[in-house]
Figure 1 (cartoon, rainbow, N blue to C red):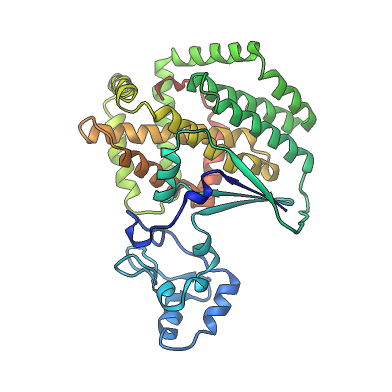
Figure 2: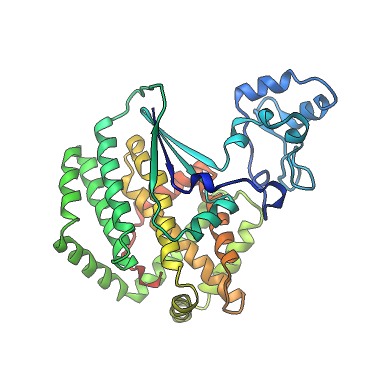
Length: 381
């Protein structure tokens, strides 16, 4: 079995009650079958608390009215951990913030930026992310797994990551190139012409293809009305998603009011002023965008081997970073045109929690991407 991890994987260490937030509130925690079996056998003074805090029919931990896990104490420490030890934790709690994507004989393990500590590590990283691989004994075959498609997706992802990490190119061109590659790969996947994906990858490594994409990017950037309508629509799309935390709704409404309700002229003025401010006060923003794009792309793109949505997954990566930028612009306005690193970290992990911790949200976002193609106007980033 081949395992891959990002090179910052071992930098992560849970800070427990010192965390600015908690991963034990805001969403339902599902316990695995083995953990539930262990809990049924617990004896002693903690047995009563354990029995009443688990929904045995649903296999989940009960929550308080404010959606805190029943085992989460006021000091934000886990009562199960303190009473029964680390080995008592269910698979969900033991793994988080580790996220595993499973393929035939491959396990790709990432760290979710929904965790504040992980977001801090990734956003502070200056060097391009590398991915490390190691082998462990064991093999696993999947029914209906297409190894040929998976191989093409791997090659496509490798090229797209190399392009994203080529800092000699402007960020808007890098984003345009990965969108173009994914689009052309998607056409061939739908036609069943999987092996011709290699022709796509070869083409987009030429100067002619780069010049073509650059022209398309410039054309899209010149249409300010289209930019305003599209970005506003993408922001409104967030309203269609399941809410995981109660404070997300007012957070979106406030950002929407600050950015869009005064119309196109006001939005474009804010966007330009914010971009100018970022260029002076946050020169690291371009690198942070790169790290986030690589994060979303590396986590989800190869999952197209199961559903065929290669292009939608790349669009979701691009739009996610765009929406994070919009939320930051709103926060900048709210902070009287100032931002700190902590604002960036908080925006990233809050967005990630709402999108990545709901399979329906991920699926719906990809469906919307299939209906609303992404114009190449990344100049504002």
